[in-house]
Amino acid sequence: MSRLSALCAVAILTCGSAQAFADASSHAADAERFLQLAQADKLVVPVYAQVQQMFAQRFAENGAPASKKALLETYQAKANTELDRAVAWDKLEPDMVKLYTSNFNEQEMQELVSFYQSPLGQKVLQKMPMLTEKSAQLTQGKLETAVPKVNKLLADMTAELGPKQP
Image (cartoon, rainbow, N blue to C red; front, top):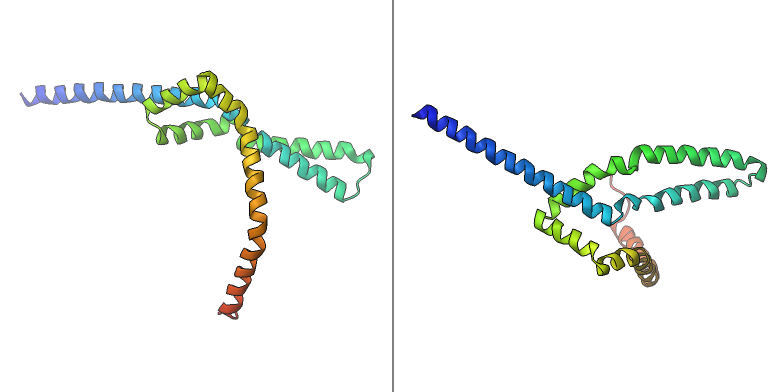
């Protein structure tokens, strides 16, 4: 009888783990679909642009002649290669899927996919980069008045603390 119980337990665990695997697989597929709809693979495009701009700025700051532009382009290409090694979508996607599946259950992922497939969801995706940029500009503008005051408070605290203790 105990042998039968053990076999039943193994069968139940096997079925349960197969269902859990299927659910995890489906959940991950929903997360992948959401990330595709959200065009998450394009999240790092601004990073590439920023790095390219850094190289161009350094090139200009050094007063490099136009005849050395090929050197700039070579280094920009090398920088892109390094970025590809670190943040290309195939490197990010598995971690992004884990991030979303750990923060949204399967039903929520399905609802996100449904929303982003809708006309309003598509509009949100289209407008979000501009809205994010404008929001950052608004915040930065408001912060400009606070930064000097915060820096003064930091200096005041440092002065009040006195010399650094050994």
